[in-house]
Image (tube, rainbow, N blue to C red):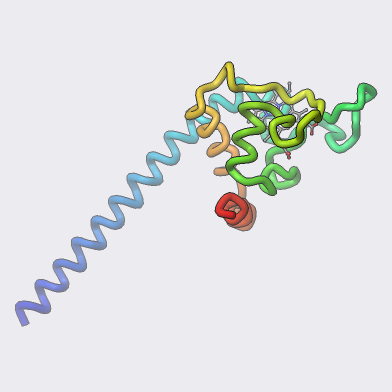
Length: 142
Ligand code: HEC
Protein backbone atom coordinates (compact mmCIF):
# COMPACT_ATOMS: atom_id res chain seq x y z
CA UNK A 1 0.00 0.00 0.00
CA UNK A 2 2.88 2.34 0.84
CA UNK A 3 4.22 2.09 -2.67
CA UNK A 4 0.86 3.11 -4.15
CA UNK A 5 0.82 6.16 -1.89
CA UNK A 6 4.39 6.91 -2.97
CA UNK A 7 3.48 6.61 -6.60
CA UNK A 8 0.50 8.92 -6.08
CA UNK A 9 2.69 11.52 -4.39
CA UNK A 10 5.27 11.20 -7.19
CA UNK A 11 2.61 11.64 -9.89
CA UNK A 12 1.22 14.61 -7.96
CA UNK A 13 4.68 16.19 -7.90
CA UNK A 14 5.10 15.65 -11.63
CA UNK A 15 1.72 17.28 -12.30
CA UNK A 16 2.56 20.27 -10.09
CA UNK A 17 5.92 20.62 -11.87
CA UNK A 18 4.20 20.44 -15.26
CA UNK A 19 1.66 23.10 -14.27
CA UNK A 20 4.46 25.34 -12.96
CA UNK A 21 6.43 24.88 -16.18
CA UNK A 22 3.37 25.69 -18.31
CA UNK A 23 2.64 28.81 -16.26
CA UNK A 24 6.25 29.95 -16.48
CA UNK A 25 6.26 29.45 -20.25
CA UNK A 26 3.01 31.33 -20.79
CA UNK A 27 4.06 34.20 -18.51
CA UNK A 28 7.35 34.37 -20.41
CA UNK A 29 5.48 34.28 -23.71
CA UNK A 30 3.12 37.07 -22.64
CA UNK A 31 5.99 39.26 -21.47
CA UNK A 32 7.89 38.72 -24.66
CA UNK A 33 4.75 39.60 -26.64
CA UNK A 34 4.40 42.84 -24.68
CA UNK A 35 7.85 43.86 -25.89
CA UNK A 36 7.14 42.49 -29.38
CA UNK A 37 3.92 44.49 -29.49
CA UNK A 38 5.73 47.71 -28.50
CA UNK A 39 8.28 47.12 -31.24
CA UNK A 40 5.45 46.38 -33.68
CA UNK A 41 3.57 49.58 -32.78
CA UNK A 42 6.72 51.70 -33.15
CA UNK A 43 8.10 50.13 -36.34
CA UNK A 44 5.40 48.32 -38.29
CA UNK A 45 2.01 49.75 -37.34
CA UNK A 46 2.47 53.00 -39.34
CA UNK A 47 2.10 50.89 -42.50
CA UNK A 48 0.71 47.50 -41.45
CA UNK A 49 -1.86 49.03 -39.07
CA UNK A 50 -2.30 49.07 -35.30
CA UNK A 51 -4.64 46.06 -35.55
CA UNK A 52 -2.47 44.36 -38.21
CA UNK A 53 -5.14 45.28 -40.77
CA UNK A 54 -2.78 46.58 -43.47
CA UNK A 55 -3.37 49.56 -45.75
CA UNK A 56 -6.67 50.12 -47.58
CA UNK A 57 -6.91 48.36 -50.98
CA UNK A 58 -3.68 46.53 -50.16
CA UNK A 59 -4.08 44.22 -53.16
CA UNK A 60 -4.22 47.10 -55.65
CA UNK A 61 -0.96 48.49 -57.00
CA UNK A 62 -0.37 52.19 -56.46
CA UNK A 63 0.29 54.59 -59.39
CA UNK A 64 4.02 53.92 -58.96
CA UNK A 65 3.40 50.21 -59.48
CA UNK A 66 4.21 49.23 -55.90
CA UNK A 67 1.88 47.46 -53.52
CA UNK A 68 0.53 48.96 -50.28
CA UNK A 69 1.35 47.24 -46.98
CA UNK A 70 -0.62 44.00 -46.58
CA UNK A 71 -2.33 42.96 -43.33
CA UNK A 72 -0.48 40.70 -40.90
CA UNK A 73 -3.74 39.27 -39.58
CA UNK A 74 -5.30 36.17 -41.13
CA UNK A 75 -6.75 38.13 -44.06
CA UNK A 76 -3.21 38.66 -45.38
CA UNK A 77 -0.65 36.04 -46.32
CA UNK A 78 2.12 36.58 -43.81
CA UNK A 79 1.00 33.29 -42.22
CA UNK A 80 1.66 31.47 -45.52
CA UNK A 81 5.39 32.11 -45.12
CA UNK A 82 7.89 30.23 -42.98
CA UNK A 83 9.69 31.79 -40.00
CA UNK A 84 12.86 31.99 -42.10
CA UNK A 85 11.09 33.89 -44.88
CA UNK A 86 9.32 36.46 -42.70
CA UNK A 87 12.53 37.00 -40.75
CA UNK A 88 14.49 37.61 -43.95
CA UNK A 89 11.76 39.88 -45.42
CA UNK A 90 11.80 42.00 -42.25
CA UNK A 91 15.56 42.12 -41.94
CA UNK A 92 16.58 42.49 -45.58
CA UNK A 93 13.40 43.33 -47.45
CA UNK A 94 11.33 41.46 -50.02
CA UNK A 95 14.14 41.49 -52.58
CA UNK A 96 15.98 39.08 -50.25
CA UNK A 97 13.50 36.37 -51.22
CA UNK A 98 12.47 37.82 -54.62
CA UNK A 99 15.63 39.26 -56.19
CA UNK A 100 15.10 42.53 -58.06
CA UNK A 101 11.59 43.01 -56.65
CA UNK A 102 10.87 46.66 -55.87
CA UNK A 103 8.86 47.34 -52.76
CA UNK A 104 8.06 49.98 -50.17
CA UNK A 105 8.74 47.52 -47.37
CA UNK A 106 11.79 48.96 -45.54
CA UNK A 107 14.69 46.82 -44.35
CA UNK A 108 15.07 46.62 -40.59
CA UNK A 109 18.50 45.01 -40.42
CA UNK A 110 20.14 48.33 -39.49
CA UNK A 111 17.42 49.33 -37.05
CA UNK A 112 16.37 46.26 -35.07
CA UNK A 113 18.48 43.50 -33.57
CA UNK A 114 17.78 39.96 -34.80
CA UNK A 115 16.25 39.18 -31.41
CA UNK A 116 13.95 42.20 -31.71
CA UNK A 117 12.81 41.15 -35.19
CA UNK A 118 12.00 37.73 -33.75
CA UNK A 119 10.05 39.37 -30.90
CA UNK A 120 7.99 41.42 -33.37
CA UNK A 121 7.26 38.34 -35.48
CA UNK A 122 6.37 36.27 -32.40
CA UNK A 123 3.91 39.01 -31.40
CA UNK A 124 2.32 38.94 -34.88
CA UNK A 125 2.12 35.13 -34.74
CA UNK A 126 0.58 35.23 -31.26
CA UNK A 127 -2.48 36.99 -32.73
CA UNK A 128 -3.25 34.15 -35.17
CA UNK A 129 -5.78 31.46 -34.35
CA UNK A 130 -4.67 27.82 -34.02
CA UNK A 131 -5.35 26.88 -37.66
CA UNK A 132 -3.06 29.58 -39.10
CA UNK A 133 -0.44 28.98 -36.42
CA UNK A 134 -0.39 25.25 -37.19
CA UNK A 135 -0.15 25.88 -40.94
CA UNK A 136 2.68 28.38 -40.48
CA UNK A 137 4.51 26.09 -38.04
CA UNK A 138 4.35 23.29 -40.63
CA UNK A 139 5.76 25.60 -43.32
CA UNK A 140 8.56 26.60 -40.95
CA UNK A 141 9.41 22.94 -40.29
CA UNK A 142 9.77 22.06 -44.00
C1 HEC B 1 6.88 52.12 -44.82
C2 HEC B 1 5.84 51.11 -44.69
C3 HEC B 1 6.17 49.79 -44.02
C4 HEC B 1 6.66 49.59 -42.74
C5 HEC B 1 7.01 50.63 -41.70
C6 HEC B 1 6.74 48.13 -42.58
N1 HEC B 1 6.33 47.51 -43.71
FE1 HEC B 1 6.24 45.49 -44.03
N2 HEC B 1 5.54 45.79 -45.90
C7 HEC B 1 5.30 47.02 -46.47
C8 HEC B 1 4.82 46.85 -47.83
C9 HEC B 1 4.45 47.97 -48.78
C10 HEC B 1 4.79 45.44 -48.05
C11 HEC B 1 4.33 44.71 -49.31
C12 HEC B 1 5.30 44.93 -50.40
C13 HEC B 1 5.00 44.18 -51.66
O1 HEC B 1 4.41 43.09 -51.65
O2 HEC B 1 5.45 44.72 -52.65
C14 HEC B 1 5.25 44.83 -46.82
C15 HEC B 1 5.37 43.45 -46.65
C16 HEC B 1 5.77 42.84 -45.49
C17 HEC B 1 5.88 41.41 -45.30
C18 HEC B 1 5.53 40.34 -46.34
C19 HEC B 1 4.08 39.98 -46.18
C20 HEC B 1 3.59 38.98 -47.17
O3 HEC B 1 2.42 38.62 -47.08
O4 HEC B 1 4.34 38.56 -48.07
C21 HEC B 1 6.31 41.20 -44.03
C22 HEC B 1 6.56 39.86 -43.35
C23 HEC B 1 6.47 42.50 -43.42
N3 HEC B 1 6.14 43.46 -44.34
C24 HEC B 1 6.85 42.69 -42.11
C25 HEC B 1 7.02 43.95 -41.52
C26 HEC B 1 7.43 44.13 -40.17
C27 HEC B 1 7.65 43.00 -39.18
C28 HEC B 1 7.54 45.47 -39.97
C29 HEC B 1 7.99 46.18 -38.72
C30 HEC B 1 9.23 45.72 -38.10
C31 HEC B 1 7.18 46.13 -41.21
N4 HEC B 1 6.88 45.16 -42.13
C32 HEC B 1 7.16 47.50 -41.43
C33 HEC B 1 5.47 48.25 -45.88
C34 HEC B 1 5.96 48.48 -44.62
